[in-house]
Image (cartoon, rainbow over all chains, first blue to last red):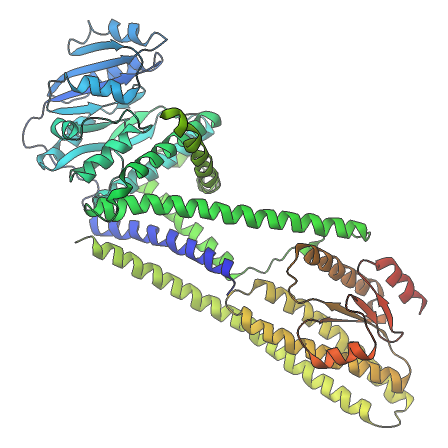
Amino acid sequence: MEPIAIVYFFYMFVSLYFLSLSLVIYFHNRNRIALDPIANKPYFLSILIPAYNEEGTIANTIHSVFETNYKFLKEVIVINDGSKDKTLEIAKSLERKYPLLKVIDKKNSGKADSLNQAIRIVKGDFITIIDADSYPDKDAFSKMMGYFDDKKVGVVTAACTPINRETFLGRLQSIEYKVIAFTRKLLEFIDSIYVAPGSLSIYRKKALKDIGGFDPTNLTEDIESTWHLLKDGWKVRMSLSASVKTVVPTKLKDWWKQRVRWTVGGFQVIKKYIGYIFRNGMFGYFVIPFFLFGLVIGIMGLGIFIYLGIIKIIQNIGIMLYKLNSDLSPVTLSDLNLNPTLLNYFGITLFIFFLIFTLFVLLSMKDKSLKNENFLEIIFYMTLYLIAYPPMIIWSVYKWIKGGVLWR
Amino acid sequence: MRYRYYFLEALFITLLIFFIGFIIGYTLENNRNLILKEYYSETEDSINSLFEEIDKFNLNSSECETLIEKGLELGDRIYRQALIFEKYETSAILTTNHLIEEHKKFDLLRTLYWANLIDLKKYCNGGSNTLVYLYDYRPKKIKDIAKQKTSSTIASEIKVIFEDDLILIPIAKNLNISYLDKLIEMYEIPQDTVFFIANEEKIFKYGEMEEIKDYLSRI
């Protein structure tokens, strides 16, 4: 067997392994996946909404928070992080309508620092973090709080879905968010949820204080805080039925920037916690290696792909030039090899497996959008992510190295 | 750790799917190789029979005509088989080493066929022209790959143009076939030769399609 074929098989094996792992976890826990524990006692909740230039969404976020059915709401604090638009005025104008609403205005210092300042003054024993462009469902908090009956649970997160699905990119992200939410819930069963996203997560105040709040030097404070909690032995849980709608980028440029930020944030946490690899339970034995491995094989795979691609292009240009030089047609039908190899069969089979998994996830989550989205969009989503993610990793590495100097 | 079973089960499932995939893949490639084996034995028998016939002394004109016809048919078959072999070879993943050996065997067979045609020409003084296409098996350099691809196209196009008036014999010259090396030595064929028209001992280098066409049209 050619060495390159071995590399391809290795990649397919790894992909298939993680797909199998997801299915194994699902089948062992399928009866528990949609069940949320009911809280045995009242838990008082403080809600923090950090906001920077969110004039278009802040009011709806505040309304949606007060429209939830959770009875033990202590306060809702909007932290205006030096917005240059009308975020502050809009939030302030709602204080009269909602007596539990407080608006703090401060100079711009970033999301993590804003949250840290607010944590110091909160009254509740549990702290909800909601992005200023996210809208929790009516019963979201009620469904999430029961997990805190387990004293070791440090944070509980919810399923996040895009609200703006009118664009093609929005619809693709809708599929993506469903798959992410489902697989994140599966990771709960092996104590390996690696992020409690800022769109909606509820922290136990004690846990958050134990880890010293959010790290302002990290681009993705939510990944960092989750890793910190895992490292210190706190459990991370997720309610798949608790839902929060969020605004997602609808322009490719914004989407790319967001993903690069997430990826660079991922690099930062890997760097910070790499010393805990193969220590501290599943955090060191699965979460860190999983991230690191994904990163390494992603970069390696892209390197191989680019190398082979360049060789193939040069070769084909050479063939065409030589053919033209000999008065031959540069491209002929006989140049196409339509005889599939075993690798092609494996690749197609794997793609079909992932496609079935995606459909299964969408059906399991009773995604109404599935009826509206055509099958081709799902295939396009899978292909796009397959193609877009490796270059994004490379670009993020570049930005990380470049940005590292600036962040010191 | 209770999760260990999840990881082990996933590993087992993955290994099982891969094992099944490899078995199917191996069976598929093996079936293709069996087809090639059949081709080989058919062609070997035909070449041996042609050899025996040619070895008879004093072939009369009707016997010569039959043998030339047989030789031509065999040539076409060998060319078609070479195309199929190439197709299977580029698609093989698990049995590539085996195919290198098979390729060598087929090239030896084609060399014997070429020798047969030389004898036939000698004894019967007629028959189709032969164009021996001498290529490198799996060239490494990009430039050589590009050149060879062009030469292959030239060979195929010439065959299409001249149809039954031309017998095309593709042979890899770098597989250490001693019988081929002897023929190359005998005809004093230079190392960089790509096309060799045996009956006139005319040698062409890479990319001389028009010249080959002109030459073949004249003879």
